[in-house]
Amino acid sequence: MARTLLGALSNAARTATPPVPFASRAQSHGRFFGSNRSAEGQMRAMSAVSTLFAIVDRTSNATALVDWKLYRKSKSGKVEDRVEVTSHAALDLWNKPNPFMPRQEFVESSTQHYDLTGETWWVIARAPGFNLPLEMWPVRPDRITPVPDPETFLKGYVYTSPDGEQIPLELDEVIQLRRPNPLDPYRGLSPVLSILPDLDTSRYAAEWSRAFFINSAQPGGIIEVPVHLGDTEWDEMRERWAEQHKGVNNAHKVAIVEHGAKWVDRTISQRDMQFVELRGATADRVREAYGISKSAIGDFEDINRASALAAKSWFAEQQTIPRLERIKAALNHELLPMFGATAQGLEFDYCDPVPPDPETEAQTLTARAEAAAALRTAGWEPAGILSAVGLPEIPYTGAPAAAPTSWGETVAGLLGDDFENAQRWVVVTEDDDDRCGPCAEQDGRTYKNRAQAYKDYPGGSGYVKCVGAEHGNECRCRVVKRGRKGEGS
Image (tube, rainbow, N blue to C red; front, side):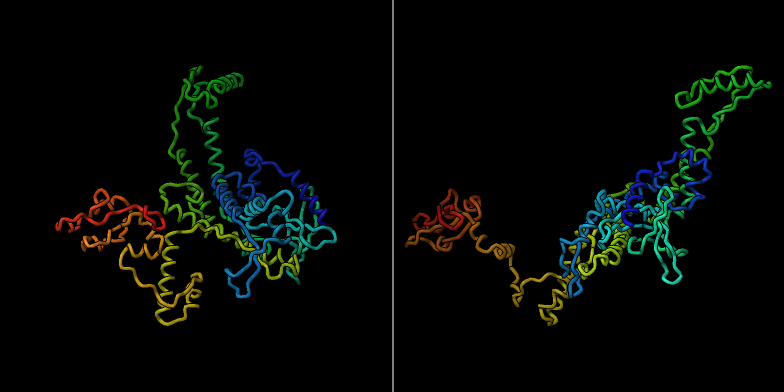
């Protein structure tokens, strides 16, 4: 079965339907838009409308860029107590789903299908006689059909290849992610279905604008001929006019008409000018269907750092995380069980895509610290307080430290001996009978730098408050520079 399916997938890649020009689509009476509500029509819409392309591209890229890890669940049930598993067959498969896709491309492709059709299909490939999954492939939703069963709800699936071959698939060969459809429990629901008329309008408005500049969607004026022209004269006049005035390069040329013909100018009406507004309104409807703001797809009007950070957090919380949660559920409840006993107690989880908010983190830390202090004051045991308020374990001394009386004491308390050793100038006095009281009090005092020391000891000696001179004695102290460990120099 795996060999047959992989062959069909390979054939699908070789015979993928090329993009259909809009002219062909327009002539097919809504084959791919409006009247066509098929999964194929929904996927083709991405390349037809720029707003839809921007939304799907942004959401699928954001989802694909998030990193994943495999954990062993903890007995406590707490997320922070889990142990990361760095080697397992399931982890290898998720990091490299198949030989042609890394995980990022696999997730991006899957998310495109989900955003456009409301469902994602993964097909599991196994080797004959080997029950473990070896490869995963994202399959186009329009090629997979569920097979309902009146007793078991779902019997299996059928994959239809591009050449029409139908391949039956068992339940353990397919994983489906879907946005629930209220009318069909087997299929997903796409936002595209709610905006198909708007997508038509946007595309037709774009084509009208294009035709207006290339060949003029409506005449810029009318040539009135007072007499009836024969077929030959009519053809000749039409060909000359087209040769001289048709196309962008011939725009605004002076018209010369014959046969007494009269040119009647036609100005662009207000209705014509509203096509631009019409396309803008359509873009709003597309964003509304997906619940995405202008800034989320790069349309910035008035933004600063704070609002940009808020917009980034909002996008991650409201757009990326819901998509990651669907993938997480599929991995843990459908893929991991395929690995049997070796996967018991394991779970996949994604890294949080929400960017940190420094201001919020600081407020949270302050609130937790205040809650811890209140609990301690109320008499609760320190061992359980930190866990209760969500703070990390830190040593507890049993009593709070004395509050510092000055900034200097605060620094000294933090640095200890290093603070004292940072004072590089020290007072040295001669202890004899001629030393005055003020100089005796200065003995051993330290200064941080030369400027401070020389302020009290101009030139390095002679204390400015020395009273020895009153008795005819020279000052008995001076300042000297010392090494980092306190030795004088």
